Image (tube, rainbow over the protein chains, first blue to last red):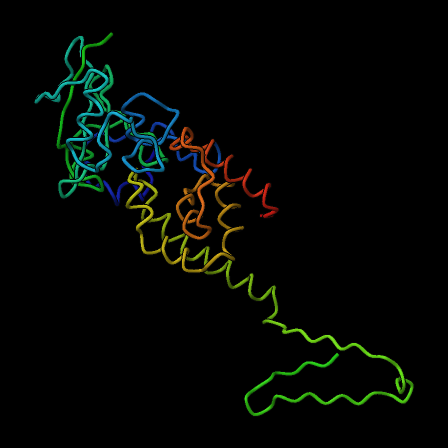
Length: 148
Length: 138
């Protein structure tokens, strides 16, 4: 599936490293109700954001900080790690940030590629490199948890 | 029908009645007519679509609710006033666009139940219910 020109414009590295649109925009059809954070969190029932009118667990500070996002994932068993390669027995997530503010989260799949939901739009499979230096900035925190 | 525009220099209206009305009790009703309604609605729709397109273009890949509602185009839509509420409700139902905060600001209420916050479908249903309860058609 050829990449949508809008995606290439926002993620310039997508033309050099794998960045595959796994499902097209469903905006206005299914009315996607979750975002990239929820997708990484593996909860497709809510739009996660530290905002009074969106979903955010009560026990996590409602602040748009990397610390709060790290706590969000620690709450379900993730711990900070430094290696983005696929590790047997572990699942990983990457939190992206721009100018120090969290923007996005991706989840690693069993084949080592990463899966993301772009806002409430396209689902993509990608490397961390192909998403870097784009609309979401760069990876700020890598985390892993043992597979159940 | 008499149509006129009252100005500081012209505040009088003159009416000549046929002889048949002599001796009859009359009631005159005056009302102000705003600019034609359809024209006004078309303009509102045009402005809404214009700013919506900019907002969607700039925020479609964002998860950041704060950025979405602080976007200048989002605030331009809010500045259109309460007349834009039916358009927001229609678009919310059709596209799933997050107009919740614009509606909050324009109407000064939030009918979304606390347990529905972030559950987009439920949030939309709460707003649709509010519209039904308050006879707001969209």
